Length: 324
Ligand code: PEP
Ligand code: MG
Image (cartoon, rainbow, N blue to C red; front, top):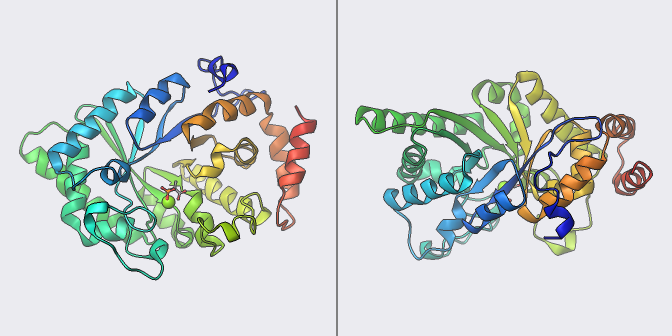
């Protein structure tokens, strides 16, 4: 971390036209939590619960999970944490679960699909989360939801666990906010139903881009082929963001793109006010936020996105250079 970013730790991520941007971190290991305070992020916008599962030798039981999540809450020191339930499968494998052989693991038996097929595991995780957040707020979201009925089923399991704990007089969270990861394009066609059900939406742009463009996120032969800074993708994100705003549902974006200053500039320009990014990106993104003027960027992008540019990267770079 450069010294100049350390100086930004206690200043707000506020733009020149005085708009506050909430900058949160993506985390997985407890070491990430020291960074949360060092760099002055607002909270943890994505806690990938599968990460601690991946570095263990066996599947953790409820007591182990509860202790882990309680530690997460303690280390966050009152800053909000958004827990994502297990996103196992695809590129994230558990060493103790044996090999799976799928033709298309990214589109395979993963994340919420696995959790709904193994409801006991999801219920254990939700029970551990509810107990670990006793007396505080629990923010929990489900990954790779493709159909609102999957969200309903996951939510039903959460409600079952709440009732189970309440019946036993086990202390519950002060409040439970239930959200969804927006990373499968099919959700776009169910937005009204989705927004009526969720407390918040978190866009996983890594997967959303991969599935929208049918473009493997990890294939180096494709990495330069399509640009997240293209007019169609940004227009798509803008529409999702606006619909969430209109429904009064909090929306954030937690894919890797938000951690790059130029991409973050575009995201804020199209309407996002909450981002979740890798910890080392907080300094550079905050510096960019403090130098930007949302009104100018929004006006520029509104005009630019009317034509379907393959990439607006160079134009946006030039704009950023000319506008400080
Ligand atoms: C995403 O898909 O953008 C995301 C944040 O989830 P992950 O990278 O863990 O798949
Ligand atoms: Mg994802």
